[in-house]
Length: 367
Ligand code: ADP
Ligand code: MG
Figure: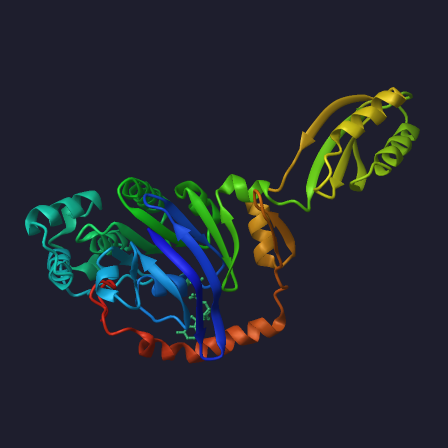
């Protein structure tokens, strides 16, 4: 449905999106997860043809967004980071206006009734948009994106600034929309993405740092496996602890061992970290049985998606292993220099309007 190849965007000297590639299948709900400034909005603005790319290709349903913008954009409904609402219009007037702008051929009244029903804004259609709550405004923004029933929906931080109840409503709505549409949604909040998306792309500093389901991403971290073992020694004394720690440390593939609290009399927990390549559990078993120690518990504690997200975005180097092929992901540390660069970006932010392409028909109400 969507194919992105080697997409790059420079704002002047600033590299905002750096050679990213991915595909989205029909009917998928894909989450773009990344901290502020990662390049999510820039990518979405290119996907929707709202800004041009520096290089790379985007195909929407086989149509090149830059070469055949009209045909490609006809497939997309876009809710930008700041919804393109005309605040002095009523909801009805605005949606009718968007209906005309998108040259929608569907039966007007029935289609707008459907869209309003779906977005739960039927009761505010006569109200002026500026008087609506943030949650309602966001739903009007979504309704606008749904006009003309586009197969692809692109939603940039759709729940930002909403209260918890409104967030749940929008999430439920997005899930429902995902049954009929291909959806890409961005967020800097992990639980948000986890709750709604089938697949996650973690974007950091303009590059794809991870791509897969939440489970795949969490499982594919290979350079750090942790486990906790509870072992009963022979003598139930601290000397057992020394011996056991030493024995575990001697196993190939074990990087780190630390005896933790005494859990039961003379029984300790041992936190073990391995190199991620060696499964040390069998060897641990053998050593324990040889010495007459009893394993009372063994608990694997792989990194959660949250650990991974933090590691990626806080700038540690991790290794991701995909099924079949290995892909090492190197992430640079966030430095002072980058903070300065961010500040400099703010100044050049006014360049943006010049980047827009001429055809903004389906870009969601370019003012
Ligand atoms: P996100 O949506 O993930 O928060 P953005 O795509 O908005 O990130 O921004 C990515 C980077 O590009 C940031 O460093 C941001 O400062 C910079 N940037 C965004 N828009 C502009 C612009 N119009 N001019 C210059 N720099 C920009
Ligand atoms: Mg953004």
